[in-house]
Structures are given as C-alpha cells and as structure tokens.
Image 1: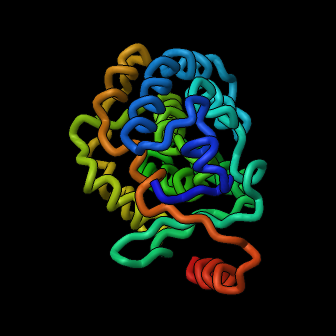
Image 2 (image 1 turned 60 degrees about the vertical axis):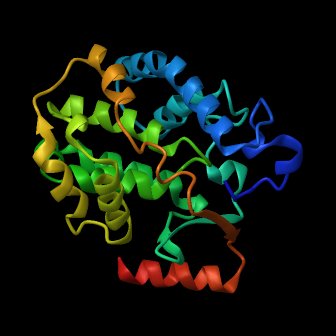
Length: 243
C-alpha cells in the first residue's frame, strides 16, 4: 500500500485505521474482518431503505467500516477535496481516472438515475456498476460498499448476478475497461451471461463471502495527486473530452 493521502502513515498507520496498522496483510485482514461483522447490519439497512440515494451509500460504508476506519461514511470530497485519485495499470500510472471529489455525488446520483428504468437496467447493468465504481467515493472500501448497493438495486429490479461464476481477473478487467470507456458495453457484456432469477437477501452474506476481488480497485496501483497540478488538470480535461 503505497498511497498516503493524509500524510501521516508513520504515525497513524494505513489511512488512520483505529489499530494503527501498517502491514498490508494486517490491514487487509482486519479491514475484512470488520466488513464481515457488519454485512448483516448493512444489508438490513438497505432492505428497509425506501429509496436508495447518496446518503444511503455513505451510511452503508459507515456501517461496514466504522470498526476499522474512524472516517468511515465520509467521502473523498469531505476528507481530501484537493486530491485527484488514479489507478495505474500496465505501467501507466494514470490508466484509470476516477471522478474528481467535487463531482462524486453527481456520479453516484447519475448511476441511480440509470437504474430507475428496470428494463433498461437489466440490459445495461454493467453501465450502472461502472458508473458507481468510477465515482470511487471513499478512500477505501469502495468495492464492498458499492457491491452491496448494486445487489440491492438488482434485487429491486427483479434479478440477480450469479457472482460464483464470475472470475476476479476477468471481472476487474471488464470493470476497468468500463471506467475508461463508459457506456461501450464492456461490463454489460461480461455480467449479462451471469444474470439469474432473484435471490433471497438472507443468502447474500454467503454469496458475498465467496466473491473474489472486491477490493481490487481500492489499493493496488492507487495514487493521489493535487488537483492544482497542471498535469493533473490536463488529464481530467482529456478524460472529459473522450466522454
């Protein structure tokens, strides 16, 4: 784990975690333990929520990770509004450009708007998941938080994904391609063959526990740079021009 957006890794550990852990393996283990302990509570919260919105996403993250991160439930715009976040792939440190902090809520809101038409959503489910991932609202825990939200969206639309048949490497590749080239069908094409009839919510914790790669876009290759950097501003401009 090489990124340190708070600038206090040596004092507070990885992302100011409550245990002050620095070792990647220790962080991953403790973080996931906190997640597993809170899955049922997070799913219950989503089930009783009349509508899904940005505040619901924040609350799910808070429920899942408040046992490990003191800032759980707070987005990047609140914590590090001056920093851009990238993920490097294939020796390109700027391969994936996540949404700038000020527009995170807008990106999540847009994903929810895309999911409102249930028939369209079932066909363009990858577009919705890609939009959620592009928003990358949190410093960590994005994959797991957004997966729970996405599963609830699917449930309300009357279908589910058979995640047991997906493969970590292929899924993350399709997700990365979707973020880089949104609405081109990358993730739609990957996920559509795994669409199945709706599953019971009480089965979800077991399903989620068997999914690999939930944090694949959260840690490896992640970097933060100042939004005031002219080079970073140019990257965002070029990224916007491609959309």
